[in-house]
Image 1 (tube, rainbow, N blue to C red):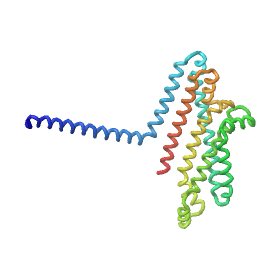
Image 2: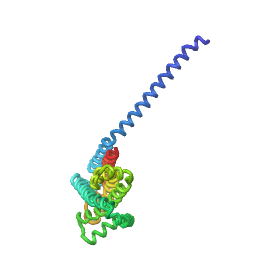
Image 3: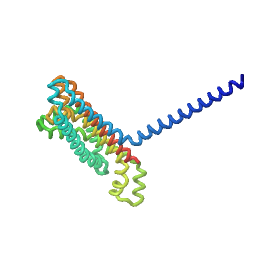
Image 4: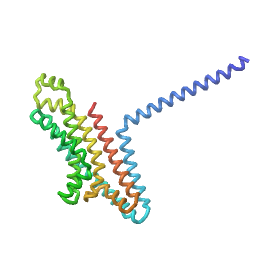
Length: 272
């Protein structure tokens, strides 16, 4: 009986060994696969977002639910709205960076540190104001148009960058500054070689937050004639055609995710 069972036991051992080898190889493959995705996510994710956005445009343009929707769903209208949205976000964000970073640096200098509490309180109050209220305020001052929307978005985008610039520079350990001063560095050289490089990742995090917020707020520019993807969303709501609402919202969300991924990759690179 024992002799007859010996081949069966041997085959069971071989079978289990094969299963363990396959399981081990599968685990290695999964680990390598996810490590590969993590390593190259800065390329893979933007490509996915672009493909999803392109697919959403093509599908909706080719499949309008009725004639009312068809008047809005043509390539020229969709791409014009998308380009205007990109222009709004781009100009407002660049303007915010060029304004907030120098101002944030200024209030961290010894002569102007008395301004820091005032700026912090202003930021805390301003962050409670909804973006639609800021757009409405500028509408009463400048009227309808893309310029009005740009000014409103620029003002709304200042706060995160200004705060992160101030926090990033003030958060540097005093020992590091003293060490640089002990090496004979001037104040200007300490700032350019020590303070600003160390604060740059924090500043970039503020820029990243600003750009994503601005991308969402730009959809509201349609209410003051600013254009952008908000035009498609607004048309969908007015015509009771949710295909337009979904398209505008999807493109806006994918654009925000794309920018967040690109700027997040840059932020991680600055930390190294």
